[in-house]
Image 1 (cartoon, rainbow, N blue to C red):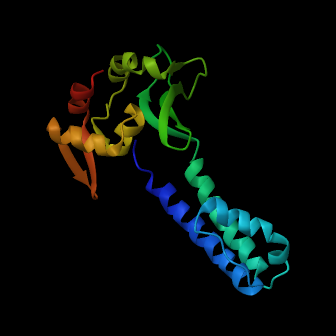
Image 2 (cartoon, rainbow, N blue to C red):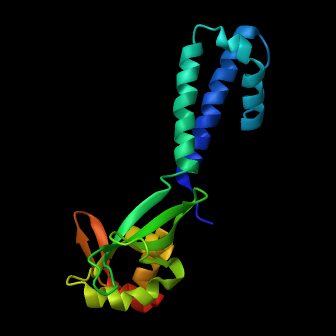
Image 3 (cartoon, one colour):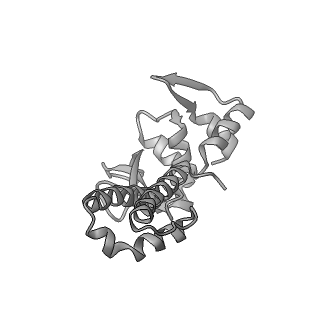
Amino acid sequence: MPFNTAAADVRAHIIALLASWASLVADERAVEAPPRRVDLLAGFVRANLTWLSGHGAAQDAVEEFGVLTRAARRVCEPRPVRTVPVGDCVRAGCTGKLRAVVKAVSGISPRPSEIRCSADESHWWAYEEWTSLETGVKRRSAAVRTWYSVSDIGLLRGIPAGSIYRLANQHQWRRQKVSGKVYYHHADVTAALGG
């Protein structure tokens, strides 16, 4: 499984903040602080919440825990929906643009869900049907996009960045660098990953 560094950072901050407030409570109430474990620290702070709410630093605690709660939610529940441009709609006579609607799955990694047309709600395709659209998009679109970033490939194919770099090196994908960002050629990606 891929290691989620953002979650690890937030967890480290949670432990540090709980330990800090538990230490304040323990020092000022002359009691022993619990071991440095999230469940024990959180239980200790919760058990002393009434005392802590009357402390002069209570407002600081509220603000610090609020900031950390929001950071944890961002890690657990990242932006739920993102759209990625695909090209012109493949349906005859439609002038709409196709966009891949990418939804996050359980806060771990984004997962493509469907392609939708901007002009007609009845023009949509499930994730499994995307490869069948490729020919139609190329035929209808005057300017087919031929270079994809690592994040584009990751979102559209559901592959972690590390695997994309490995595949690019292994299959010697053509690449170009623009403003420090690496892009890989569509034909090489398609040949290696299929469809």
